[in-house]
Structure formats: structure tokens, C-alpha cells
Image (cartoon, rainbow over all chains, first blue to last red; front, top):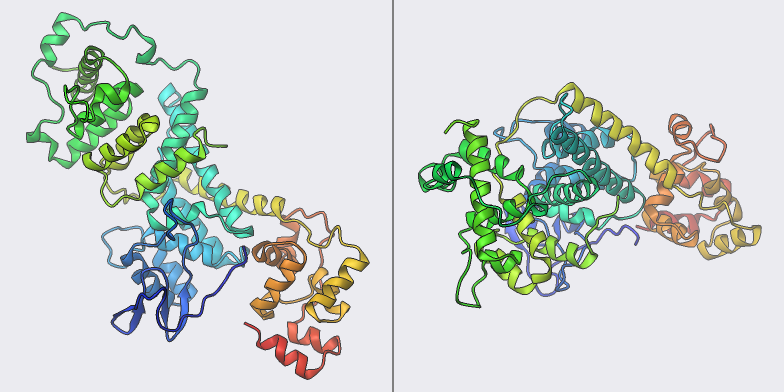
Length: 297
Length: 191
């Protein structure tokens, strides 16, 4: 599909644009002085509506559009999130795509590198370790980055609609990519020890049962602490899939079981008996407790 | 690497990701509606709701290395994907293209030899030209720009011999091809 610049006069589909300061604003198309400066996204939702950027992103795009390429690139290179000039990744991606007609230019190269740095921040870090976990992280990083770069290359030569999702919700899109790749890496990892392959109802040792009897990682007293939540989620991530899913649903306060067939339960969702769910919940609690307390309890 | 989940599932997960709030109610709604994707939805809900701490650390040397490598691969990927739009065209095809664009054959030849400064060509003309050679305008522009940068041409490992030649604006090209002033003005005013 050819690149189109849409000239806009008044309204679209009967929707009148709002006026923000001296700029006219429309949910899907931004323009000033009757000329579009930001092209709309092209991907359609399942219900047939066009994807559209967050309003605050569109306003930021207009602001950045008034800068020279050199000024814009310099602003995109700011890494401190607290700096009021910090540019959201959605905007950087937009300007990378807008500059794709000249992918040999230094401006394009500069923006491209800033964007890749933003993606890398969302992926597992490279380490010098060589254990299984580090190798899996390295594969996730490499493969996720590869897929994202492939999309950018496709976008230079055509229009990669999948990137529209990244322009709407960059961090969520990268996280979805990350989990997609994680699944692939996990599938390829034949030697992975999974709790699913163990005897499902194998119980816990008595002393472990005692230790976790009153343990609740989602205790309201501590769950409000940011650092704790971060450590807790990192610990949950390392659990086998079944346990990870159980804990995620518990975190969202979903019941393990219910006599009401209309209630979404963990047992029904994961197609496991209530007893199996409870056993694996306890195993997960124990693993988390060990991880968070470095084995001391 | 292809995704191992179906396109339908991918669509549902993307729609879930775009929900304003990722919470219990949203997950319940999707689990009720798409029970066949329940595990994917729970996994994604974890990923989307996990706590992160803003990473303001400067890039490590390894990060810099990865970024540089990604950039080099990006250039190689583009080079590998660019198709020479004129490679399989016969003389007759070129003649037809000239007729359809209403320009002399020499103008079409100049584009084939990448003699034109891409930025000087009106977008509408580029769109029509790209369509005439069955290319996306983006791909066509990348091909044309390969002639404007000798360094780029070398790095793109094209099958076509690199060209180092004087480039002309679209207007100069039209003048050289004896296009009438009236037609020139019309072509140049296209947006």
C-alpha cells in the first residue's frame, strides 16, 4: 500500500477536531494549518476501527515535529525518564518510521539506535554467566531483538502493520514479543525441568508445609512496597509455567474453585483439580519464600 | 522466527494488551470469551502487570555492541530485500511505463539508472512510477537512493554494478528530455 499524505480540512466522519492551544487535534489525525503533519496508523482492530495513538503521544508528536531533525534526535537521546524533555518510545518509533524513506541518513541511523536501546531495556540483560537461566535469557534477548529488527526492515520497504501496535503501546508490545519468544525458547529447550512432568499431586515435606502455613507472598502489608513487588514478580517469573499461572491468578484474587459455574476459577481455567492447584500453589509459595529470603526461614 | 501461536490467538492477545486496564475483570472477560487461549492470556496478564523499576543506567558496552550489530544487520536486511524493479522488464515494458506515466523513455531510463535525486521527485509521481513497476513506494525509493550514495551502494551488496554518477533533479531530467514547460509544470506541481 503506498504511503499517503492526507490533507485534512475540517472534520472526519462527522467528528469535529478539538482545539488544543494553537494546534488542532483529532483522535486519529493531527494537523496544523490544514496540513497533516502526523500520518494516521493503518492497522484495524477486530471490530474494524483504526488503531490510534494515545492522545498524550499525539500531542508530544506535534511538539517534536516542530523541531529540526537534529534537535529532535538530541531530545530522543535523553535517557532520564524524569527529565521533562524525555521522549516516549512510541514517539521515537513514529519518527523512525517517518524517516524510513531515507534509511541511509545519519538522522535515521541515530533514531534507529535510540529505539533499539529502548527495546533492549525491556529485555533480559546480557550476563557473563553460563547457567541455564542465563542462556535462556540470552536467547530471549537475541530472538526478540531479531524479530523487532525484522519488522523495522519490513517497514522500510513497505508498511509493517504490526508496528502500529508498538506505536500505540510500546512497552506492552515489547512485553508481548518477549513472552512470545520465551514460549518459543522454552519449547526448544528439551531438557527443561517442568513441574508439569512431575507427579502432579506429589505432596510437600512436613517441615516445608509447616514453614509456609502462614506464608502469603501477596500479604497486603508488604505488597505495597515497590521493591518487594519487583522481587516477587522476578521470583514468580522463574517458576514453572503452571505455578506461575496459579500465582498470577491468585495475585488477581481469583478463586481456586467455586460451586458457582459462572465464576472464573483457577481450577477451571488451568484444567486441573482443586487439589493439584493447591499443591502447586504451596510448592510455588515455598520456592518464592526460599528465593526471597535466600533460603533462610 | 515465526510465532508458534495462531494468528487468531495473536489478534486476541494484542486486543487484550490494548485494553485500558489489565486487571481481574478484564482477564475474566477474556477467559470467558476465549477459553481456548486461557493459558496465553494468563501468561500475558502476568507479563503486562509485572512490576518494573525504571532502568536509568547508561548503556553497557555489551548493549552498545548489540545496538551497533542490530544497525548493521538492518542495513543488510534491507539490501537483501530490495528487488531491482527493472530487472525483468523488457524494452516493451519500459515503453509502456513511459506511456502510462506520460513521460519520454529517457526519463524512465534515468530512473532505472538511478540518476535522479529522489527528494526532488513529487510524491504522486513516485507513487505512480512505483505502481507501474509493481513496487511499494518505500521499496522503490530505497532502490533509487542506492544510486545517490556510493558508500551505501557498496554496503548493500547489490547484484547491480555500483554507480557513481552525477545526479539530476527531476526538473533537470525533464528539461534534458525535452518535456514541454507546460507538462513539466504539471508534473512538478503534483503532490
